[in-house]
Image (cartoon, rainbow, N blue to C red; front, side, top):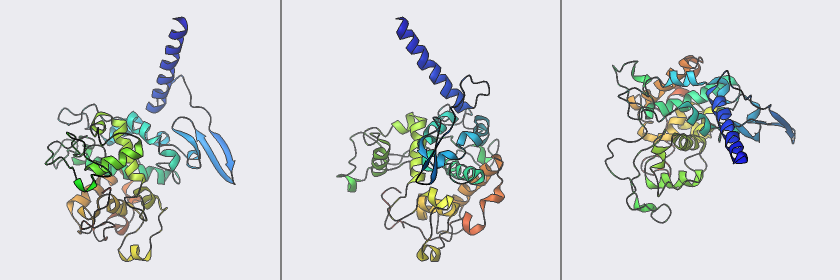
Length: 324
């Protein structure tokens, strides 16, 4: 029993250490281990504690907890636990950081210098905030303070089962594939594709996304980091400048920046329609978070980079993407 108790105590202490690091506890007893640096084929590669724990050039940069702490997260989503919110107690900083730890070695929030890193997190959370908000014009604290109010579609109009994908992503009897998550997932084919990527059985259990905030953030970050179709950029690559537009992209008024992230994620349901509220709401959340994070909305870029009202959709509605 003595050995068992010591093992349990050891596991508890490790858990406390991780939670302390995630929450930025200034009085934490366990400090992060030093960064491991290696040169691989002339490229500096690093491993930086649990948050960026795979050898990667991105792990040599700041990690998300270096510039976004618990207090800032609370500021960005100030009303999410208000009594009238629909997902009280679900979303939290720890879940976001644990989910992000899978993708920081791939460049999520770790690409470029500090300003670009902060801008990307503001951009990603701008999408999240707008898509999970229950804010309205005269809401307490303003309409932009209500991100992460929802974690699921409240009154689904259908079960979102598309039999066209019955061979690849067949609908499970009784399962409903309505919107869930930080960037809401709809339809069986999207649950199937994201489930494969995350090694989760979301086809049989789509409810996992509304039961576990870390999974919900993982699904959203995966969608941010991966293209909707082969040959197209991911929202991440379009935002941080990894994507180089073709001549056709330029003629279609698609440029690296925030506007194109909306095109990738939502197509012509938000873009290609001029100056509409659906687009402006997402932009407003992004600018709001830039201000609250201390970057400033002036860093959002010029109109043609920030918006997508004049862009042609990558995947027009007539030919929907497999993960739209």
